[in-house]
Picture 1 (cartoon, helix red, strand yellow):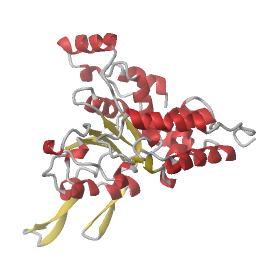
Picture 2 (picture 1 turned 45 degrees about the horizontal axis):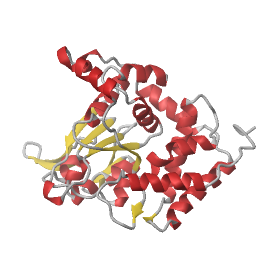
Picture 3 (picture 1 turned 120 degrees about the horizontal axis):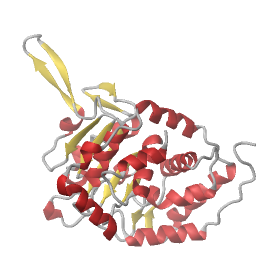
Picture 4 (picture 1 turned 90 degrees about the vertical axis):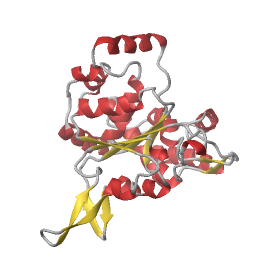
Length: 317
């Protein structure tokens, strides 16, 4: 899969966000989920829709609200009077590659829990029957910053946040990009011009090749040292878990792969460290958002504190 070609096509609908698009595509090829937290109207849903169209992956969308039930996500059993049998009505997690979950933090804890099994194990158990979902299966979730409980915003449990490979903030575009965006929407819909430039088979092949990227023993030690710093930091209540370490390594391998290397270097870890871990830590002083300047500052300090190792061997040679 040619990342440059994919990004070039996505620029027709998304302006000035190449690095964000690249990271999301890396996560998709590394078999990971992505949550985008930011203010309304900055392009979170646009990015998700653009990625689905350009990659050719099938997609479904579900709007999370306070009254959404777990069965609205996973599906449910119903009685067929004609056949005198119970039949399964699949939810939106089935028969799709990309599930766009809009405003994930507006659903109840019970509804959010409906995603835990499928995000981790790519399956869902309904009425004691386990059913597999499509491969790949990626959750692209959007969430607004926590403002106040009166707006119906619920804190995502740490167990669910930990299942996301990346947590990113979109931010406002630069002035030149914002003007280009306004002009593009003046007389036409840019989505109509988007073309599919890759497909599911290429993405699955990229995943296989990413899995083969070599990781030197010293890189494992580097990741562990970073994780330990988060666990022992006085301002962090819960640090990076072993699952978080594995996710960090997968993203680093994806970064190396799309940089044309068959081996991971410390810079691969450092480049994606913050976006891979900012949502995995719990602060001693509770915050309303998962992406904050305080969290970024602490993670940047940890990156500076832990020395990068020297790679003695490359690609197993």
